[in-house]
Length: 204
Image (cartoon, rainbow, N blue to C red; front, side, top):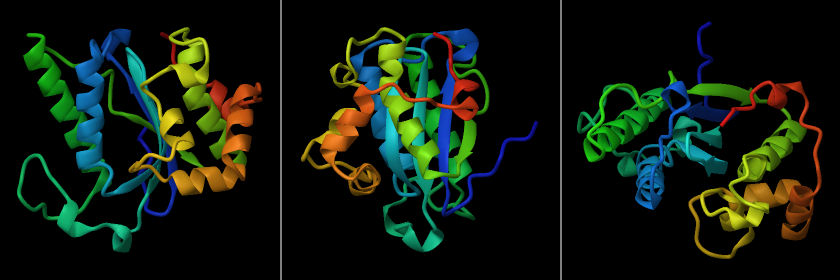
């Protein structure tokens, strides 16, 4: 089945895992490198609402900006100085290809790093959006990488509750939860995800 297009003005759940379920992150430097490349290729095109990186997979919740919201001067590309068209799909391709090449070189490996073309699901309600944020941040707890949601370092939870500078759309996230306190409380409670999230659960 053809993948849906990432259309400006919409929210999407982006996710994928390593080929055959293998790890895509092996040490701390890999997580940092991936996030830096994400910021380089994706942040100019998308607002990031939530994210998590685990050993063999990742999740991002993004908003695709309208063209007039994109700062053309800040764009960076991996293959050409200036592309013929601005395309967020190509930017995700640049991100994953760039990361895979770096990992293959560093660890002297060959073949596909990721399982397939990245998955994407459109998010079309506030309830779905809030449940996804909860699901993404609780992923490390679900997979037993952490006891509590705030213990895991490679997710956006800490950035969203802090006052430190971030490239994420923290203001939007806290507005849909009304406050930092309600955001924290929501994450402590069990949530009924519904079929649209339960069917997407990735095994570790």
